[in-house]
Amino acid sequence: MTRRSILVTGGAGYIGSHVLLQLVAAGERVVVLDDLSTGFADAVLGAELSVGNVADQALVARLLRGHEVDTVLHFAARTIVPESVADPLRYYANNTCATRNLLECCRDAGVAQIVFSSSAAVYGTPPGGIAREDTPAAPINPYGSSKLMSEWMLRDLAAAGGPRYVALRYFNVAGCDPAGRIGQSTAHATLLFKVACEAALGKRGALSIFGTDYPTPDGTGVRDYIHVDDLARAHLDALRYLRAGGASTTLNCGYGHGYSVREVLAAVGRAHGAPVRCVECPRRAGDPASLVAESAQIRTTLGWRPRHDDLDFIARTALAWEKKLSG
Ligand code: UFG
Image 1: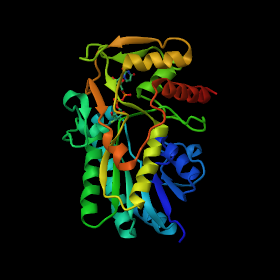
Image 2: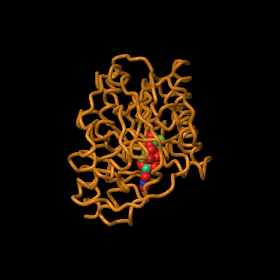
Image 3: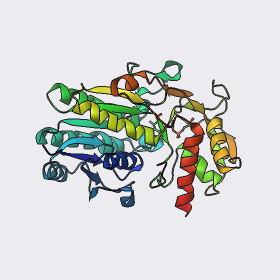
Image 4: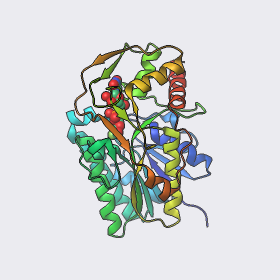
């Protein structure tokens, strides 16, 4: 039997393009759907790119049938928390409503399995800063709510006989392809590693440390930073799991321990060979003091084995890409 294809929505984006590299390397047949609103066509390596929006049901239905798709990896979304607070309806449209449309197409085309990009943002501010999969979801911004609603749709559709799924709740994704082929190219970045690399290379002024009075060891916010290459591998593990008949599940995707803002800046400074210029600022609205994954479940369920649980490695790959962008 010939293996059917995989549709990767958002495959031109930061995370989707890294997953695509591994799918192509594994010999999978892949088609990418991306509207290029934040992604880059030249990040799509080894697969056909269809430029369009996930909400375009006629286009999605055509792709699913034309490419005999049996698996969908759904990355396409808007992902900036403050933007979601300022313009919630845009997030519910792009993330929740578009996912609903995609799921309807998947159901109608008989798609067997879906891997969905969810987020640690569904937890909001969990007690003690540690989130297990059974910690009650309590998002504190529209971005987190938009992802949680998508999880619910997946759950309800699977219960009604629709595709089985793995929803991966990403923690703080960072770093870039270790081989330097692609990376994080997002304009007007807000994520700590990216901003720190830009500051190190003089592309922006001093980095603002948002809050130095948190109840954490050095007073700055603590997050579970996961290398994008390990995150990508989790998607291939999820695919293998679903193909083997695994039951629908929702899993944290993080290393299970955290680092502070100052520790991240020190790692970027070591990678650069000079300290990153920074200024201490008040807390950023909506930031939890600490957000770290309980990550046992993904290891046992999917057999996921991360390879790059090393802050210095994350910093080196992130900085190498930033230098390439300055080119
Ligand atoms: N930070 C700074 N200065 C900056 C940028 C960030 O001090 O210029 C701090 C933040 O206050 C926080 C930490 O660095 O303590 C990480 O902040 P990021 O903006 O890099 O990431 P967030 O933790 O806010 O959010 C990210 C993604 C969300 C996702 C969430 C899940 O943006 O999409 O991780 O944990 F939901």
